[in-house]
Image (cartoon, rainbow, N blue to C red; front, top):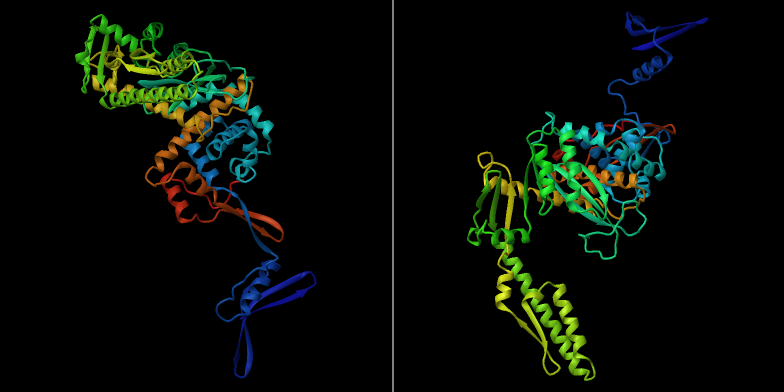
Length: 529
């Protein structure tokens, strides 16, 4: 079988023929007319007909086909698909600003740091190819923080509708924290009650509102000297105007929901659950509203009136912890007394009054002054413990009282107690956001808008990290380890004749495949852009 080609002027004729001998003569049989085929197709057919049987493998020349290692794609594609699932990508939008904001969120999850570090991170991850982003620099990301602050409310509203399609949420968890600053030039910086124990550091106050599942709905930044109760009013307004309102319950931490805040909640028709402070418990005991006998391992309940309930319990584990802490403080002060006595013996001219004052200050700092007595006898300091006062000081160890206006027929005391304990999910969100996991601090911005945008990025990043923790909880791998493993998955750039033809994504190795399967994520074959 062969192809018979003949050129007559401008016309070229191609016939597919077969030849055989008949009566000693060679006969040709035309099997088909291939004149409509292109020169390239005819050339390929002639090459194929040269071989009788299986065609030989065709390997392009090395100079024609080159495989190059591309950018990391595993972590970026994973986080991008998770952002789609959570509704973050849709809420941010498809504009250049929305895509920059999404990269800031993804970069915060992959490797925390400043806007400059996020820009450099994009140099090793295929973020522009995955998200369809134009080139950008750190200045673009700083400006993008202002855009995020401006559009925060609309983005939060979209995420709320994604999480609660019916527009309703029955219970809200709210708590505040503070985060210190290394500098003093932030627009919202002020000195206040520092929960981080950093004396002499200015700070910001951050309020986080979550739903019953602990999913953050909105985050707000206040000046560093804002009192906790003063942050509640804006949260009530958000719930009433943006998050459905109606017959909902607001859960706040100890001492946050005072009389003014309770009035504001009830004015909107909301219910509340909170805990009261130790002085308030002592006041209730003094007035005979509650009794010490009610504090037990089991929950007890008191109804001062029809619109108010107190739920009481003593946590024996917490009581033992507080007793151990008090004994440890006593031992610490006694050791300090012994150290001062050794010094007084070694230095006869030293003043005992100075040593006594130093020990008293130490006792007051550790808050054990009310049940210890310090005196000087013959140039020796003596520490005496008032056992009765110490017992009285520990009378309320492990005791707590919850306060709510929810009717008993609507919710049991056990359920009230469980809902208050759900605040631990907000505390966990703060702990994750403030530490090295997401690095809310240090804050590398100064203006109010940039600060709000930065904190909002951290909240959105926590939504993704929270989902990663749940999905990978059974794989014995941390979020950091999982993302590091996925970051090793790189694309393969295929160059044909010196030009990039495509960016192929290889099949992930087994460990990466397990991580992706836990998230129900399927890697594409090629980079999308």
